[in-house]
Image (cartoon, rainbow, N blue to C red; front, side):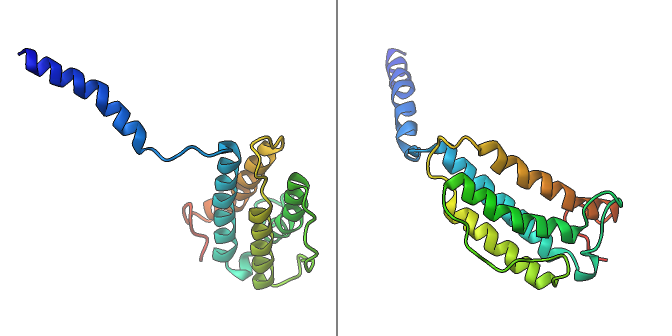
Length: 161
């Protein structure tokens, strides 16, 4: 009985230390790492939404007062370079301007470019004071693009007719 108690006491004191040794080393800036991961996830969702939307549906607007899908994509393409450049202190690259009359392929390509710039210029410091802008903006824009899928009764992921 006493031997069991010693084994149990040893297991209780050693196992947590072994488990703690197995965890990944902590990052020097976990907040910046979380922001980068969130930005990458948002970029994937927004680019996937832009690719999935059929070209003829880019004119869809939930109500006349709201932006059309095409306007949302142009808004993202124009705004991301400015926001990410301002946050990181890196000058935004001078890329071709996009307009609401451009084709779906051109808009999606420009959206990819802008998210690639944001990914490469995301702050490496955890002291970024603009973190809420990075995390909240893509979510709100993605939410507005998801409106098409909901209104057409196609579920969360699809807007195809």
